[in-house]
Image 1: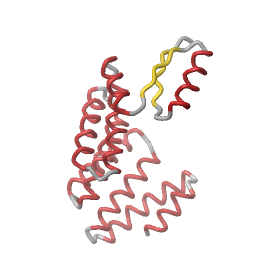
Image 2: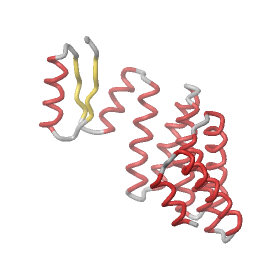
Image 3: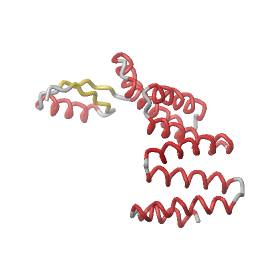
Length: 178
């Protein structure tokens, strides 16, 4: 194949096996043991799309650890690259991720701005799964601020899309929310 492939794997045995398999297929591979190493490699290559993905993935780790300030900073870096690349799906994903943090912090106004921004893009793209996720996220915020009738409407919109897609787990989640 002759491809150059970056392996990001923290377990040495796994990365060695993958590297050997790729070598047998005629590919060259480089190994990074974490997202920060991968980010450095992509920065050296000036690969903006992969840099954006790395920032998003590293931000998700900070988000899970509860370091919201660092997570938002990295999501915004990812967003900057997504905007430069006119990558609408990644723009929407970054906005939704930032919105999730604002929602967790109780900053509902900013969360709604982010979720509605994501929703608009996903509607333009016709991405039904992420439209339903945005509806549900918006409903969560509305429920938090005790606007129950409006929340119910957004949960119902999410439910309708998930039922249309045959997503039984999503349908169950929305019934649970309702």
